[in-house]
Image (cartoon, one colour):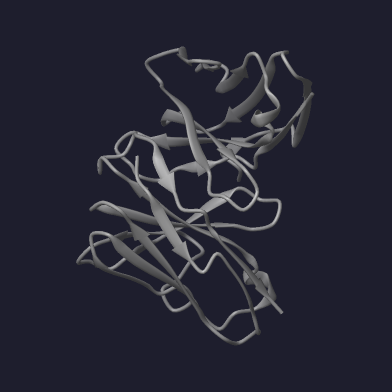
Length: 112
Length: 116
């Protein structure tokens, strides 16, 4: 049972436009959500996180939105840059646990 | 943040053999984690390793197949034993710097294992 789902395996966006990556989850006990970026031959790099007490968190070009009622979160990148081309994973954890459940990833390609 | 070094970065191994992956962190951490990413799949937690105690394994993973050592607060090893082609994956070491969860985890660069 996949508790964290990224239903779009890939996404292509023009440079300068907005990239929107989506993630759905099924476990209502999740209360902390993260996005990671992964380049080939490198480990995942932390991008941004959000606690369930918030519905939005912004860091520079990256904004994460959380809709708890829909069990949905999204990552917005604006403006998108070619260097953003990577695989993006969303992850979730329950309160007080160290275990992160990851989605299967979305490969973003930003076209110059 | 933390600098996490994994060795080897990649290896090709014969089935039936074992491979030990090393993870070195540049600071002392309580919690270290080992993940596996099979081709086209998400990252799956194998086990949590605390210094001075036995590792805690997730469902589907057993100590005989994936023995883990945690001799000190900056180092851990994961051994993939009696390998089969199904063990071909990327293995990742991760740390939680704050030690109480609900924070970002940092990852090493991963070890790409191919079993032939």
